[in-house]
Image (cartoon, rainbow, N blue to C red; front, side):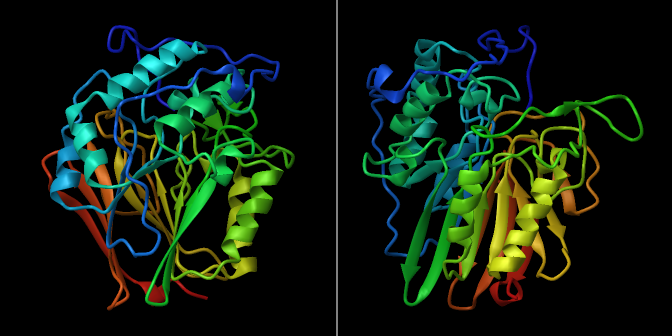
Length: 361
């Protein structure tokens, strides 16, 4: 969502989305080796401490990652803008991934715990880009290699990067759903200066516009039909907040409502969203009709901030203007979930306690 001036970030290259779909495929991209050990998630045990974050400029230090290691997180979820690529040149994208791979704090994180990821616009390839970005196949191939997605993973076998993990131990299940909010998303409507629209975008009333695309929606429905005690849904853009004119699910409100309706129809228990993108941290709590409360923990950014935090009628506690990450602590025996916002000084800025059994139909 965020794009910066060349004065601040000389390495970021501006791109305009092309109108033609790319014919470039993964086979056109040379294999890349980023020289960093990859720990795969162990789905035979339930993680108790899950950390997550987004918005990490590869040109700058990322000391907050060491706090994640110190807190003994067992899994880290990258929520997008994991690098600032902003290019149609894969050699440029490769070099920026390599800068992240070479950071000692990133190497320490990756050695200590599994890392999984979704992408947002800047690591996808262009600011605010959707399905018209012409190098999405090549960018996906590099994303899959960098994040160590196994060659046999279903994530490599369909367009887009969406996928899931199911963790199970002692009869309890944690489902991690990784969404792709870029590959299939239609153009957003720019702010027309009318009414209460602000910042860059206004809601799109066109019922044909989409965030996920029909194939991903069908896949998501099958995922939500799987039994689980807790479901973490990783969305690079915010889901649970109120409209603020930046990129989010509120730009295509009928898709946001479709998601709510799908959770209700499938009676999917235990849904909690995590999101990034906006360069501030916050926890949102919505109370949709016909279902339990929905939380969205926004963790942004690892080393990015913003000069103006927008109002959010669903916010619980205060927003975090400083660099931040999010964390979930799960007490599987007591069936309690703690949602945390942690700042650059390792302070807990927000703490929300939730009974797992309250997130049920």
